[in-house]
Image (tube, rainbow, N blue to C red; front, side, top):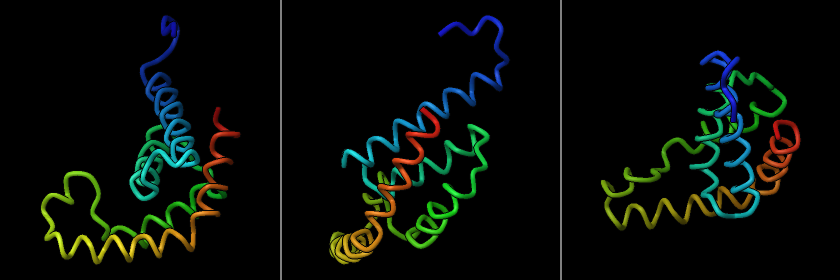
Length: 113
């Protein structure tokens, strides 16, 4: 990628948008945990300057309802029995929303690729 005539802000936004599309595709393919992926998408959308409420509001709603589920290294700090209980709850919660989440990720890929 040639950045010769591009401002740093534009470069950051473009790279964030590319990563956002990548994360959405990984969710579609089942290769990224949905909660972790949607949290990343929200962060990347902010960095990319995307303010598309039609796409982001469902993600914001889902993430806000799942913010107590630990991901990544935070899981290492949890009691295994507690994690087992949360994982069951997480699986049930995701099952109810997976189709709409995947549809939203498809919209992201189509719109921002």
